[in-house]
Every structure is written in structure tokens, then in C-alpha cells.
Length: 446
Image (spheres, helix red, strand yellow):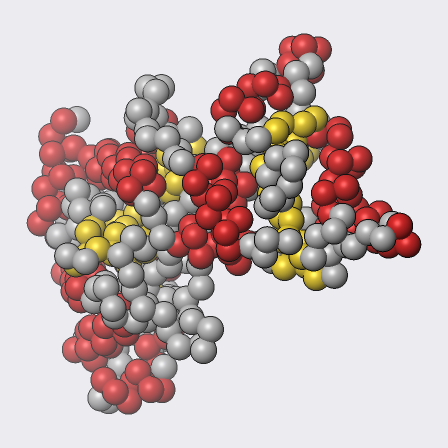
């Protein structure tokens, strides 16, 4: 697997900014994720907590970041595993304290085994505790124990944090706006994701199993430098394309059906997220094309609404208008556009929003509404997906038989800029003629 040349984030600047947002008499504790057991003594591949990674870039388990503005012995402390030759023989190399100090450029690195002794001292005479309460019940209990230890010294004149503030709220608002380095890495993640989709178009054949097509796509992700998928790939042939989060991927792809592929690569801890819907035999039938063209027109209208200053819900509303117009034209629904939208009858065929934030998490963090509950305005540096769809259940008698069992979704990744929407995944064909041409080229290759 090639080593990607990715830009390095300024983690120290992020930590400084976070401390500026904190109360000067506060202390923050941000743990990474805990390893997860798969079964017996087998664990899932470890992937650190996104907030922790955002502030440190440190990828090992059993690590905790503490930020204590103004602390005499250092404002930034990373607790991590020390070197252990015996355990490293079994589990792999560790950075150790010296390696982590060099890598993360914090003020101090201490052993994770010292956390119980050191952290209660860091709480003394602090007014606020910034901590992501509720993410881990085990770690929550430890934090409350440490707070009680600090509280026990109140008769010695010590103060302790009376209030716990969710530090994730501060971090997530920072993560919502991507800096140039993040955008470059996202372009890499989306680029590799797109390469996998283009390969999938060329390899798709009737008679393949869904997981075979998924394997072809994911092979490209790994070959081009992605260590992991950003989420379990969805490859739904025929009626399986009507299941939004279908992941069984074990059915046969049949001649005459569509296949909906929702797959993305993770690169540098950032996610790509692309969906395309293909005719398994390389040519859209008239009925399939009718539905596909409605969804494609809807997506184009939605992307055009991704503009600085417009509401984050505007692009969903634009998508819905075009989808409803299409449903009316196909005589699947009746009435006026406004009446259908007000009644919500279109939701039988389009039941999800048109997109979400994209970043370190595929459904990335950040509020969609402002404090006054109004939809927030789009700003430069935000990244989101645009993914309208139509799904006609095979068991819905209100849908003419020619369209039953058809599921279509088209999804692109879009950067909000002052110059308009920047479609990061524009290199993946989605026009009917482009899709059919790429699939025909794959068939010609054999």
C-alpha cells in the first residue's frame, strides 16, 4: 500500500484555540476511544476517538489529553502507554512517553498508569471541568471519582469544579470548519473513494454477488492508500437498493436490475462518502432512467443551493421540490407541489434528509440549528453531502408496477466556498450517458 503524502495538522494551534474558548479556571480531559472486543480475545481494529485525534493526531489506545490553562507544570499533558518490550512483542510497537512527546508536541507526557494519581491534583482550585460526559460510562465513573477526590480536600482550603461542561460542544464547532490541510486530506479521501466507484462501474456484471462488487471497490481503496473504509459499504442490488442502510451485501446482481453503491474510503482519519446507482447490465431501462433522471435533476438543484449565506436546509428544500415535481409527472402522486410537500406524502418514497456534514466522521459533528433554533447559515469551509433519492418498495401497490423495486440515490461531497459549491467528487460519472459509457468500457476490457 503506498504511503500517502498528507499535510500535517497544527494540533498545537487547535489545542490553544480550545483553551481560549475554555474558562481560564477550567480544566479539560479528553480520552481517546476504548478498544472494542469482537468476540473471545479478538478485538475490532482500533480507531481513536475523533475529538481526541483532532487535538493530538495520536492513534494509540489508552491515551488521555488534559488541558489546564495556566498550570505551572504545563498546560498540555498527554497520558499514554509507556514502552513495554514484552507487550510490544504481542501487540505491536508503542510510541512511549518520549515518542508521544515528540509526535504531539505537548508540554508533558506521563504514563497512563499515573492518571489516577495526577488528575485529581489537576482539578484542585479549578472552577469548571470540561469533559464529554456520556460517551463512556466507565470513564464517566472514573472522572466523577477523581472529582470527589478533589472535593474531599475542601477542608484543606481547596476548591474543586462545581460544574461539568461538555467539551465536545466546543470541539465540534471547531471541527465544523475545515482548514486548508483538512480540505486537502478530504480531497484525497474523496479522490480515492471516487477511484473505487469508477472501478466498480467497470467491473459490475450480472451474476456477481454484491460482496464481490464491494470487494472490487474496497480493493482500490486499500491499493491507493486508504487503511479502512469510512463506513460499511452498501451494495444493494434490485430491491435491496430500497433499504437505506443495507449492508448484508450477499445477494446476486441480476440482469435488468439496478445496483445502489454507497461506499467511501477513510484517509488520514477523514471520510469520503459517495453514492452511485448503476444498471447491472450496463444500460438503464426506460423505467429506471425515468426515476434516475428525476433524482439527478433533484441533486443538481440541491448542489446549486449550497451557497454561502443560504440556510443549511435550503438545499434539502430544493431537492424535495424537484423530486415532488417528478413524482407528480410520473403520476405516482397527485395534486399540487405545495400540497404534496405540506402533506408530506412524498416521504413514502423519500424519507431522509438530503445530506449531512462530512469530515472525520462520515456523519460529522456540528449543529444544524443556531441557538435560537433557526437553521444555521452555510459558511465557507463547511463540507457536506448532497444525496437525494427515490425508493419504490416492491410491495407498495400505489406505485405502478414498472417502478416497483427501484431504488436510486446519487450522492456527492461538496465544499462550501465563497465562489459557490466545490463538488469534491465531480470526477465520478453520474450522467446516464457517462455511466453507461464507463460500464461499456469495462465490458470491452473483459
